[in-house]
Image (cartoon, rainbow, N blue to C red; front, side, top):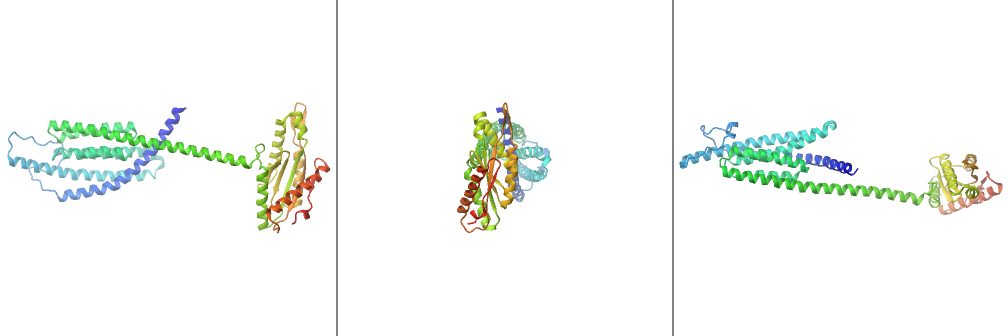
Length: 426
């Protein structure tokens, strides 16, 4: 059904997208871990001491907002508050980057581990994908909320939402859930550090826009990826169909459509190829011509279909009674040719007599009697390493076989004619 093919296509695309996301996560880890450590070192060098009254960064201080100032604060109080916020911000940035670097390093290591665990691969890879992408958004949320101590910018969250949507292949349903949860986390975290109600509302609205923008970018990237994979699958299908059609046409060009043995042109080409080999390496080559008789009377009595069944039965018998290196071709409507490499003329004669007996046992039961083909055969041989050109050898070999076949016709059904060796020595 159509929906099943669509489901299978989407599942295949989802698997490819998962593997690609993990590959990009590894590259992102290799890039961001050193940058995070560099940022930590830079922030630590620029760190200014915080007075004991201000205290260092604790979990409690992360959850506290800036103390509200009275309507007429003193200049010293404003300076102390600014220094306290700056110290909190620096310490928080160092802590967040350290946690992010360790988290990404762990994700990258686990991705490498799952590649060596085929049984656990798919489930663990999906977990690691969600873990890695969720960590990236949590990191931007943390940085944006920390920045509220020294300003009102949410640029880090905006950039994070857009980059996650642009760099990774996210299915629309998963992207909607991920960005929805990211906005909820962002709105909650921002309320911990931003005490100005108006500014908090404005930043939350901007955060909602950032999530929407990231989702739209993700949707566009996913649609482009699906279109590309669909076109690639269709192109591959067309390529396979074309290859199958080309193979079929090639077979039709060299095979007899009824019996599926070589046709006349290809059979003569096979004979020349074998004679070329024999001219280089030596060895006698034999050609056996098989001529059926009585087919016209069979056709007049029972029709073309029965005649074709007889021809097919004879062709199958010839194929089954030969070696893998031998070749069979249909030369005319009622005759076949057998190529026997590395075979003496006496061996070919014995084989021809055995095949004649087998052909005589073919019977097709009909309402009135049975249809049986008759046959006569002729054998000719060509010694290896002949001095004459291969095309001339082929002509002589075939002409000698036809001459011997004429003699076999005079002897009647079941006769085997053997061409004298001197007629093809050259």
